[in-house]
Image 1 (cartoon, one colour):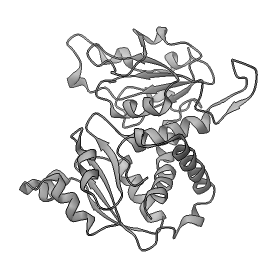
Image 2 (spheres, rainbow, N blue to C red):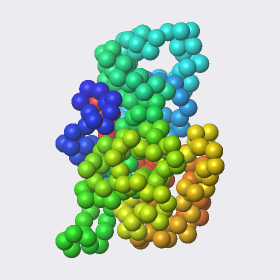
Image 3 (cartoon, one colour):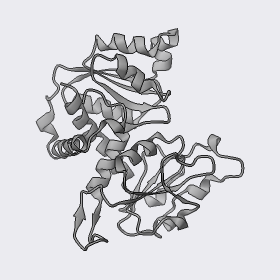
Image 4 (cartoon, rainbow, N blue to C red):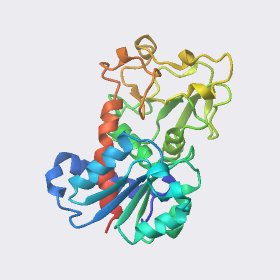
Length: 297
């Protein structure tokens, strides 16, 4: 795997290898402290980012590589002077050993990878893809899914991404995190709860309220709703998960969120052991370290 543009670029074997490597890193990070010594990696962010950029840059440093970074490339880089994305990537390819980029345009990652002569990683492109977020989300599900009994046959189930029931909530039309994750979780059963006009393009069982989501769903994946996109009369509070709503679901149901959150999940859910969104964010460090080890030679 030279580039990561989309979750479509990942085979099941790639994913298992990445997860296994992330497990090793998480258990013994010092073992990998010089794994990329001497490498230089660029992070080009044309949109604001906290978790993705900082976890990538931390991953780079923890692997012994160096980082060159542009946090607001639309204003602080040559794009402000009118340079094309392709010219920027061609130039940067001569300076570094890999490029990580976030960009507001849906086709930006494919365009960048087409001209990059070093490994390229998509850290978010428009509303279409966020593959490294999907990877850490799937890794988190794999880590925490631990049902005492498999509902189908009575066997213990742990670490599996199969035979799941997953509910995705929020802006599912423009939410690139959900779009990427659903690709990785196919063909599991997906339930979708979204405001009118923000319904997903992927296949899912439509829900009109939290009451329509089965109480024994394995995962509730909440996403951020941008109020400016809501149709008139639609209240964002209708899609907020409170502790009272969470308690309607199984003790094994995981509550996830890619963060940052506004008021999609009330803070009274934070102490519930089913709420794993901060652990989910921390897993981004280990999965991105593993990805870099797989991509950067």
